[in-house]
Length: 269
Image 1 (cartoon, rainbow, N blue to C red):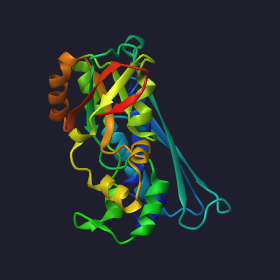
Image 2 (image 1 turned 90 degrees about the horizontal axis):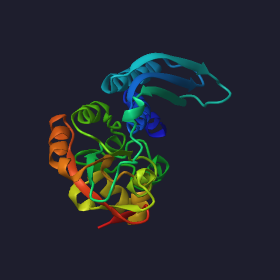
Image 3 (image 1 turned 90 degrees about the vertical axis):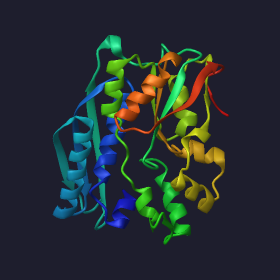
Image 4 (image 1 turned 30 degrees about the horizontal axis):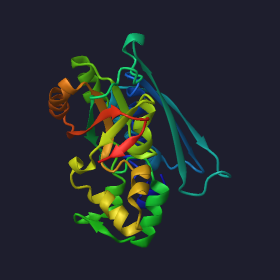
């Protein structure tokens, strides 16, 4: 939000709001049904609010969820001029027998990574500190701030389609805590995830953050998604078919690693 307000770019921040909710609902195996939002500000700017809500509507469209209402609050004693805050929630539904809780994951299963569009919606306190070190930096010919605020990818439609085609044993939305902390949440205490980050390929935004901010590798992995927005766990025999299906749905998918015996941790190769 702070970066969007600094850049005056209000039309995509609503996508991030929706994405954080629908991707979290999705990892339970649920289809997002509807979304509600809350917009709070000091004094309502109609143009800004219209852009924000348009982004929320776009996020709902990408997720196949209905935007059924929202609330707007003007509180001049709470917010400075130009500041606004957003909140929202999503309701989804899944048949009890289809609930994905990680209980079917076993040693030998495959971790498939889905590429992120950038930092998504995590680590921005640190990102803004790094930007202070190089406020005019560019990346691939455009201001780096624009690359950093790319809207969060919404994975709902491709993964729902995959679940209709084959069993999905586990899903991890890579948010705060990165792969290091999110994947263990769906693993049995006697299992580990082996992850090979080299298969992700170039990650210019994350390389820039690490280099400019002198951020240690472990800190990068615990703060950012580092190029992986979602992890899908399937039976090893379904690996190639799952990757083909996800790529056909428009995702960049890659074999990220495998599940092994262990103690509920992520081990980087």
